[in-house]
Amino acid sequence: MNRAYVFCIYPNPLQEELIQKTFGCVRFVYNQMLSDKIQYYEETGKNLMVTPARYKSAFLWLKEVDSLALANAQLHLEAAYRNFFRGESVGFPKFKSKKSTRKSYTTNCVNGNIRIEGGFLVLPKLGKVRIKVHRQVPDAYQLKSCTVSRRASGKYEVSILYTYETTVELKEIHRLIGLDYSMTELYVSSEDEHAAYPRYYRLAQDQLARMQRKLSHMERDSQNYKKQKRRIGRLHEHIANQRKDYLHKKSREIANSWDLVGIENLNMKAMQKALNFGKSVSDNAWGKFVSYLEYKLKEQGKQLIRIDHWYPSSKLCSQCGRKKEDLKLSERVYHCECGSKMDRDYNAAMNIRREALRIALTA
Image 1 (cartoon, helix red, strand yellow):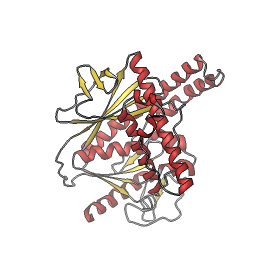
Image 2 (image 1 turned 60 degrees about the vertical axis):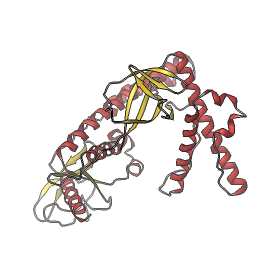
Image 3 (image 1 turned 180 degrees about the horizontal axis):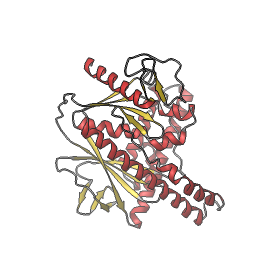
Image 4 (image 1 turned 90 degrees about the horizontal axis):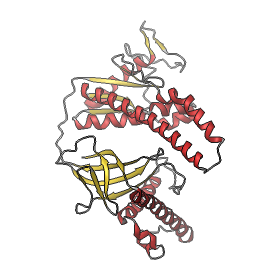
């Protein structure tokens, strides 16, 4: 299995300059390869196989940075092409912008060229970079690769990917729960628990609007403009950290308490566009919550069951099984002919729980 740990790093001015060069070289190689592949396909109708080595003779400054970072740019481009041809509503690969606020590059561990020594991380070309290791990595874990990135706030971080061997036994299902997505509360469970998500973006929206208005009155690319962009980046980073902290704690609580968790397999991007709930859906970060929950359950031999999004969880009565065809989105209380009356989301969570158990037993 793989696991990534994210740590803050503090490069000195020379190391920071080399990191910025690496960002630029990786972006240049990616864009150059993409441009050549497009041009070759338009001329011949065939796919062009190209590597970063092709450009090093013409652009000698590419030799100044880590060669594995350039090689990973090629792998990322190939992955983007595979995703596009897979036909799962993935767009054609795009050129990387120099103005992007978040920049990164990935390098691989070869013959121990990447390692943590004391309070430093040894990286190719950079040497020893100061790092804050805030959590212990087990000795049995083997370092696989590192991704160095710069946040919009100007801070640097490294995501270190480890690989390890483990034996996970599938646990018997004794305790199970269903989670129904809620726009305002993140989820409502089949135990009638309401997550009561604080909606961190909405809480900071007024402050963010003031800062962005101030930015709009500044001269573009001036020093004050750049400083204000970093302030906005720090606020966005603070909101993201609050959200991640909440989602990690909630997913850990569920993963430790239940053997089987059922959720609906929702298309969140479509929900953002179709219902004009973009900010609310993004603030909840349901997809991130599900990914956190999935790997935490998997590590313990537990299961996450995704229910088909066409399953009428909201329209079915969890008590008698009748289907209410004319249920409107505005109806927040579910009334059934059998006399049952309950919260709409709680009723859906009960149905999701039942369907998840059926799928698990028939699998």
